[in-house]
Image (cartoon, rainbow, N blue to C red; front, top):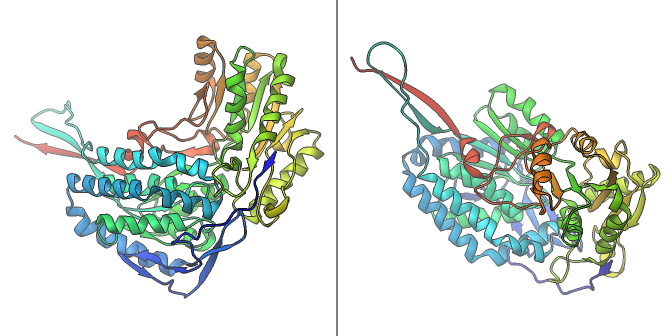
Length: 498
């Protein structure tokens, strides 16, 4: 493992230690309680900003503003106008993208080499949703009732959306929530993660600059147990769109029962990534490694259960470990860094706890296995890329989501047995397989119980292609036409004409 040296930190104008308010009804306001919380750079511990800490009263204010906008001016805005707003916002995101990517790096630690690579994705999502704005339509349906009765459907916005996002990709997570809401004519109250709220607040500024009317987008930073819980249970919220852990997702489902609000959930994963002996190993080694090590493993669909065919197990896992050892770990502002810090001390404790558990269970760390404390990195929350060999299916490191740069390498022999073992998890978000055999690829992809199957690649994503989970990984889809449908109600209209 290579460790980057200390580098001067550029003081971003939106992360210069100043105070940031919340956005409600087009105005920047303090929390009703006056409370604030700090957000710090996980690579250095440096204070980035103090942020208004929202709670139930602030959520009430934001939901009321969103309701007024939804039932008032926003309801009269035509699809073409909503499309233009999204396109203007896309242009502003593109114009300010270097700043936004740096904010993500500062606030949650992902290397610039990763956050800068999301330009096409971030801008592309906004432009995709802009295109969908004018493509929403119902249909005429020939019914079989006697007489002259005309029947058709309308697609109508769900209403006020409560959006709750995690900290592992604030820029794209924010767009993934506000994009379809605006496209369909909904209004939104966004609760960003307390660990990384700054990018969401900056995007809200850009939305106002683009001309988005007051109350259409509201951003209330705060903690999950206060602001998040108030949003999930609010009786005037029509839908909750949540990305995060399955435990919190279950809480949101329970909270939604009060008014039976619509819920879409993109939750955790323990995804299998399968390497067959006939794979292109030169491509599979970095592919399987970065399916986990990217973003320091803080990706819900990371391929953390690495299944490798027995005949190549020792060679392949050894190569993945060597690959991990060569990755440069450090402050994400260094453009050469490939692995940044974990987002917080709490996440560091969680991941290092699992490193201890894995070794106690009998797994062998071929690479990594602990916290990085060399030089300037001692002030941050760094864990070295870790590859555990000799992992058994029943080990906790093979069953529980770690959310860190930790690979659990598992051997297999028989393909039928493999599929059963790969599916033997409560989750079902992502999966991957590496093979030169097209027939094998189709056969295994069909049998894997996961929302995405990547063949000879991993984490490929596009605004037009749906993403979501099976089982405890949630329900509903993000991206694609299916995502837009999540924000729409279908109304049937019957007209007797004679």
